[in-house]
Length: 167
Image (cartoon, rainbow, N blue to C red; front, side, top):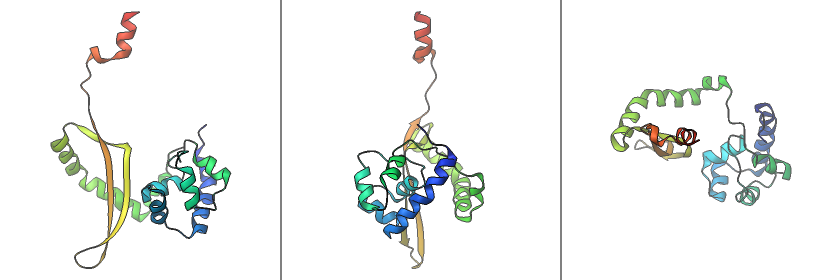
């Protein structure tokens, strides 16, 4: 059973409190569990589903998680966001960067792969901190998505139409 956005909003503060009690960062938990730091954050914000085989490692990394919270984390989440989130400066700048560089990124995807898109389902994302050549901190956001080619829509490949015509 999926949860509503309202029930997720009630659970997220409890999940983040368990993380806070652990004294660990998202990256610390990621290192202990083998997940990416962004996926750990997604799990704790109820934007991703904790898989049963990962639950013991996640529970070990965040000991304050109760059985109830782990059970909730293993349910399919209601993936959404509050529309006002785009006004938060860090999110606004990420959106701005994607919009600014989007056409060029699309052209390079098409040039290197063909007519298609990057999946946001079969997708990995991480945030890393590095030092730039000038010695200042830099943010590295990595999007690692499966390439999905567009398909030519031929009638003979449309199984629903073939099954209907066979009847």
